[in-house]
Length: 102
Figure 1 (cartoon, rainbow, N blue to C red):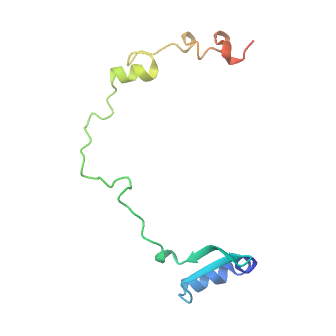
Figure 2: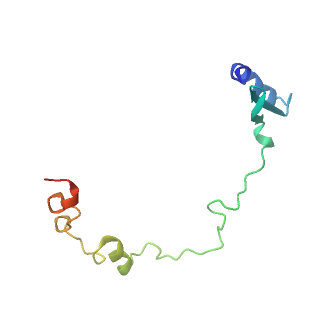
Figure 3: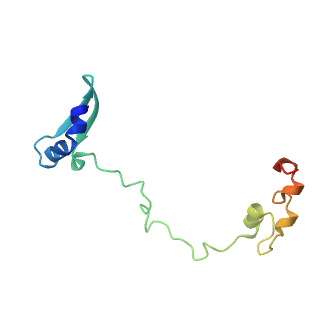
């Protein structure tokens, strides 16, 4: 392990220059890590990446249109109606007994 710490730059250069294919780092004679050139690493599976279904689905033009019922679920009010934060007991510490306010 100490040798790997001391000579890391040289070990990486050996990998880059194809002098070695793999370097195994051991601690007390027991292998604990393996260094390999990045190009030798198994290719990344891109099938699960964002955009993998590009062109498969069509996004409707009204995707951002607010939904009345859904808005009510999240805001507790009708879509477009602004609720007064003072009327909400959760936002007013004096009226909320669990807020820790005297």
